[in-house]
Structure formats: C-alpha cells, structure tokens
Image (tube, rainbow, N blue to C red):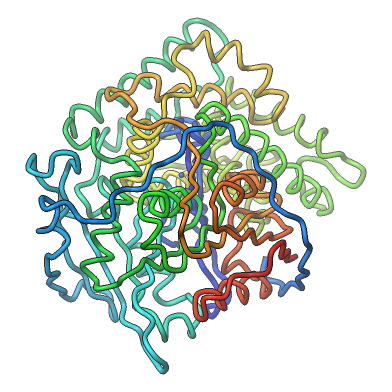
Length: 559
C-alpha cells in the first residue's frame, strides 16, 4: 500500500503537498505510498504499487448534514497505552535536543533517541532526525505543529523544508513552530536499504502482468530478491518500523518539545499514523487533521482492491478531460472513458511486447511496468493531467517513451543521476510489518484477478500482481486490521476527497465513524488529499480548527 501526498505548485499562501501522501496498499509501488518537488508526482500509493512496496480554483462550500456511515470491517479495537510513562522510557521522554543549523535557511535540525523496541527498552536505541522552523509571529505561540506527508516512507523533513515550512498559510506559520520527524527507517532516520540503484532499475521494470508460468516465476523471483535484500541490509531494523512504534516515537517527540498535547497534520498514510497516535494516547490529542484517510479496519487485500477501483475512477475523470483536447491520443469528442481505457490497455499490451526507446543514459526502455507507473503517478493530482496527456501523445504517436519514464521516475523518487531515495524500501518495510500480506502465493492472486479486473479494466491485473510482494517478506507482520476509537480524545478532523484514487472517500467515512470524536470534512473533487490544493472552503475550515480549536460543522462539504 502506498499512501502519500503528491506535491505540486500552487499559491504559496495556501498550498500543501500531496502524499508522498501516501502507494498501493501493500505491494510494490504502482507501476502499478513525501518531500515536495515542484512537479513531483508522489502520493499515497496503492498497496501493491507495482513493485515497490507495492486544481487551483477557489471553491464554494456548503454544510450538508450527512452523518458519516460506520463501516467496521473488524471488531478488534486499538487499545490505549497506560497514561503514566514507564520508568524505563523516562530517559527518552526527558532528553534534551541539541538544535543546530541544517543548511536550509530558517530551519534547525536535531537528533532524537528512541528505544528500538518499546517492549524491551534496554535492547538498544534508534536515532531519529528532527527538524523545525520557529513560529514567525505576530500573535501568541500555540506550540508545535507536527507534519507528516505519508508514504509510508515519505521524509517529513523534506516535506517541511521544501513545502510546509514555507508554503503553509502565513497565519499558521506565525503561531506554530512547524516540526517534522523522519520516521524510523526513513531518509535520515537509519534508513532501510534493499537494493543498489542498478538492481532497483531492474526491479521497477519487472513484468507485473505475467502471461505464463515462466513470467510468474520471474515476478516471484523479483519479489524474493527485493525482500532478501532488505533483510540482509537491515535485519534488526525491519522488525521495528511499525506504525505503532512510529506513533510512540511521536509521543516522545511531543514530550521533548514541551507540548502537553500533540497538534498534527498528516496526509495519506500520515492519517493512519495520526489515528494510531490518537488510539494509543487519546488524552494527549490536541488538534489533529487527518487528510486523505486510511481505514485501519481493512485487510491488505481489501485495501488493494479499493485502491484499484479508486485509480479506475481517477482514470475515468482524466479520460473525460483528455478527450476534450485535440491532442488526446485516447480519443476525441464522443469517446467514452471505457473506450479510452481500452485504448490505453491495448497500448500497455504493445509495450509488454515491444518497449519504446526513451533516450535514457542507462539504457532503460519504456515497457508496460514503467508506463503503468507513469500513468498512475499522474492520477494523484489533476494538475498533472496535461503532463500525462503530453506524455501519452509522445509515446503513442511518436514512439518516444521519455516523458512517461520521467513520470515513473518521479513516482519512484529516482533522480537524474539514477539514484533512488529510500522511499520504496521504507514503504515496503512498514506495509509488510503493519499487516498480513494481501496474497501469499501466485495461486491466490490468480483467483482474485476477476475481482481486480472488474474494479479496474485498465489497472486491475497489474495492481493485483503487485500486491503479492509482502508474501515473501523476511519478517512476519506484527499488526492486524483493527478499529481505532480513541475514546476521550479531543475533536479530530478527518478529511476525505470524493474521487481520491489512493485513499477512497469511503475510507474517510469509515475512519470518521470509528473515531469517537471525529468530524468528517468532505471535498467534492479529484486528486489525492484536499488541504492546500486550492479550495478556500477546505483551507479555511482547517485553518480555523488549527488556530481556534473549532472543528468544522458536522457534515460540512466543500467543492
């Protein structure tokens, strides 16, 4: 699963990033889960994103009184931890951070220590990277505001330094110290590593729509190799990168910063992290915004299937827009989204047999896997649709795969020198530890293919096979699907976008129904996540909550 927010340019006063919210649930990054880049196409990823793990118009709003529905898929409830801090953890809760310049004007960095294993604090510790930018004033300082862009695997520090710390509304930056933590296993916090860059190039090009036993064997061999690489590079760490442990790290940070309660904005997978914090520490919840919600009560397979349907919905919206333009290679006026999807699927099949040249200095060609990832990357943000339309035109009419390859590289966080960030490694490590695998064998995938292909004729086959990756993970999952109620917590704002591909709107409805104090804020629109994407209605509601503590009215909707 990949839950990350995608970042794109917009008004500096009101923009936020998109999930490296949050990849497909539980699998390799789509070919099929956060720091900000100007045109970076990252966001929550689907649970099997193909291999790796797995709108600026101001809008009017209306307050519709529709109570979010309860959709409990499991009766297990995340239990709160004791209110008192265990003596063995006191050294961590009372540590002093040494802040230093970290090369980005206006930002300070520090290193925080946490136990590697909270169940056995004496078994060693982990060093976590923290960054902040101080409240600018004027006005009374409200404390610290912790931000997380999703993934899992997105760098909170990159997100802070390149976006939130300079792009959040001025009134928020005036009253809060903005703070970010690279979660354990991510970026600067003892990062998980699995493959070298050339091996990762090979991995991302693996065929995830196998047509015969030999291709199935090649795919499972790729998953095994990836998992073995992760296990070889980080044998101890892989057992301790769960979301529960990351949430406990956030509570240590809250205490070290001197805040009695946690104020937090999490996007995509960051909503799962924030909701987990609320479930573990309900009495320490301050103001929590969970934007692009993940439903913790669902199994990995259900999440993958829901995301597959979500990407189909997003593609249909893209197709309707595309065919209105003269340069759309998927059709013209009168072409239905299904017909456009059939043309794209046929193009993918052609690439499976005959990859296109790209001019890549490392010799990569555009095959079906990389092309699918490039298309999925653009589904996170409708602002990327013109770029995708141009990339498809170049590939389908001029046989030039370079633009689709660039979209795929942005998704995988591969830079122009061919180096991969650790996003996809951390994404797999967290997803495969948090939840039992969606599939344990190729036979299970084969039986589920009809349901996935029904959910998405375009992406269903690739996303189903992508969800197999955790089936070969070297560490047994420690988590299970569960509800989060956080009884006794202060009001929490859950934000859902009606046509969000990576975190379907029903997930926001379900999480809001589970949380005892949640208010559901709905954005009727496209793309992944809502805050800072151009809706004044959404931004004003969230800013008012963060500054004044007043949550949106029950049933509030924006468009």
